[in-house]
Image 1 (cartoon, rainbow, N blue to C red):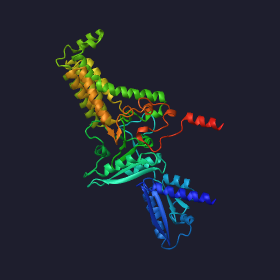
Image 2: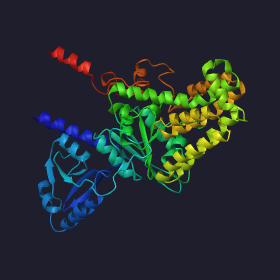
Image 3: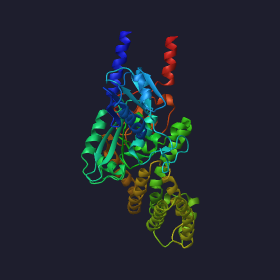
Image 4: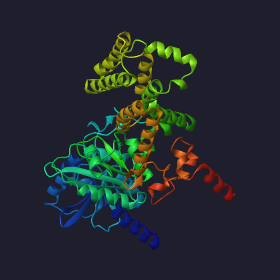
Length: 497
């Protein structure tokens, strides 16, 4: 019995030591007559107004007249309906992570009072995901309040190992920025690197987390995003459990997570909510869509300018017929349509949602039909550009979609000068650039380069859950196994029998 009490006491000490690493963990001392009451809580999970009016103020008034002799008498001191007394570490941990305050007479006391003052409903606690629309699964998005966002994370990742470290950035704005990771999973080097780079930032105002993304990137001279930006809670939770670091600033509804690889930008949380066959199919569709969007128009220019011989005879006549009244070379024809599509995209993004949708549909149809009738472009090119624009929308992350849109234009220019050779030169430069990129020191196109055979299974396709029970080896996590697969559990049951 004494050994059990000693073990529980040690567990309590370890629990307090672990949770005290987080910036949103608060501990204060309140006078209870001649005694002192220690109260600890997570500020992102409780209603601080209730704490002030229903706990601290009544205790201050009551302590002037009498002493709090026993912890059980706290129920008569404060006007809180539900106050529990417990000495079990598991119960205290669970209640603390659910938004309760824990009170005790001494820091090493085993018996604690649990005060239920969790955040009340009625305040806007989350957004619907707008830019990353959720087809299947939760639709919980972050808001502009840092404390609310951390509370949303803690409600999903309900463990004391979730560590939140807060720093101030901005000589004028003094913006609160939180670094989030899971202790025991995330490699400490990534956390230290992120913290050091954030502390080295010297700006006057921080408006959004996207600014921090650019400041701490390994390479600022690239169109590719080196950190994944998301407004979805499930995507951030997935990144944290994989062993990545998450960053968010006050006033921004977007987290950035890293280190990120190229494949992370083509993975959607819906892949894991659907059967693995369907998830793999849709992931391959996205990857194919990016490749088509990047090379479709440049291939059209290369073929129509230099390589007519590769066109089948049955298709050659319709192609010549469609271009017979076009007075421009293929390069100008393609640039005219591509820039028109970009105009429509930008205009639609800046207008209210309903008007933007109408503009995109009506503008695309009217302009496309008018340009063909006016002889400015061929109808085959209109189809190719339309498919290319649709394919670029298959990318789940907006920043990666922008990078693909930009890279189409260098590929178009290269193919117009050297044809297919120009396309291969452009692909070569693109591959060399990707190979040289890193995110927090992790190669950007891993597990392709350097080759990681084991990590390839969750890149192009989404395998069954029994095959993805280990975290990626390239993240060098402190804990490699996420859960025991069905095969391992089955073998353990057979061994017991």
